[in-house]
Picture 1 (cartoon, rainbow, N blue to C red):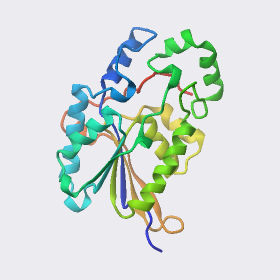
Picture 2 (cartoon, rainbow, N blue to C red):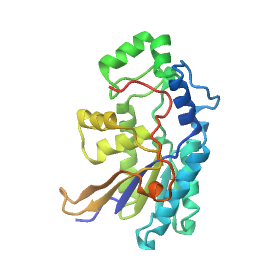
Picture 3 (cartoon, rainbow, N blue to C red):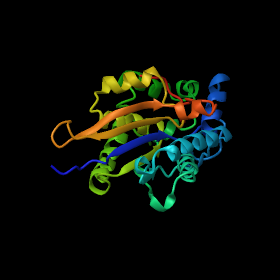
Picture 4 (cartoon, rainbow, N blue to C red):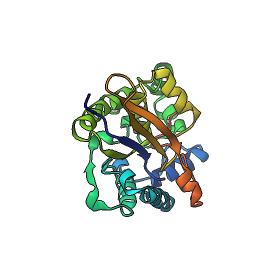
Length: 253
């Protein structure tokens, strides 16, 4: 049977952003709001985030040419675009298909945007309580998305992967929730399992979770998990590893 999947898929969370830094400062001070003026889509990388992207780009560039990415798909959010662009500077861009895809954007937080955990409880106690009851997988803040909403748009991305990029080596640069929701889909996980992974720790900035096509899996083959939150490229260069949440903060389900 003809292969329908990419040969390899790398999921990369963007480097540390200015929003990650601002959020950590607000949480440490028990503040209600995260002090950042940019829209979430416009939040850039921090200086450390740029260094993280450089380290990871060097790791990809050191792979044998036949094992390097042939396709780069990235979220249009500035921090994801900048991460992808820095990494691609170390690759042969003439060999790459590069696409910005709004379906890869971070989960939208709606009315809770730029609020800390303390701020959500202070300004929207009824939503805080509802989220605790429903859990993050299904809870949709007004004007925002649940994890299920993200999963729905990523199912459409997977249709694109199998239709347009079968046999290719695809690098996807996106966000924490995006990475987790892709894992839910690729590994056919349950709500309970993916939330257990989420509770165990945040996805590190510029970490790699990867899959390789295995023809022995299922009917016609499937993607097999190879790496999870892989940060050795950063550690090897002495680049600090960070695992800050994206905006806004919220208690784990």
